[in-house]
Length: 165
Image (cartoon, rainbow, N blue to C red):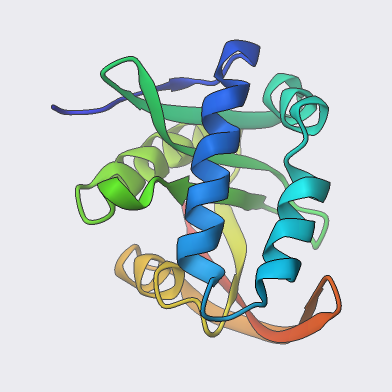
């Protein structure tokens, strides 16, 4: 079954939260403590926070849906770090990893960011993220900077990656 990518709506909030929970645990379970993962999820993925993000007019928020169920999501908006867009999130349910869902989400996000006049996109990925970093590299992102990212009480090396849209 090929997923369909579309704009997210408030009705997608529970599905986005489910994918976030599964995706964070799978991507960061070996990198961060379980407590840190739970703290980040409870801070950034409350129903109100996700609905605010989904309905923000200055952002593009997309979901991938298969069989009526959200299986992935991505978001992008103006970068606070100079000209261009920021890829804020891209997560796919681990059951769908390797099925092209992330690529479908990213391709549609790129098209919509270009429609908004952006020419470049950047993202921040933890250097230890063995699921995310290869994805960014396969999609033409190159490292442009690095810094320490604090998540909960933990500090991690983060790579800033960017590419033309």
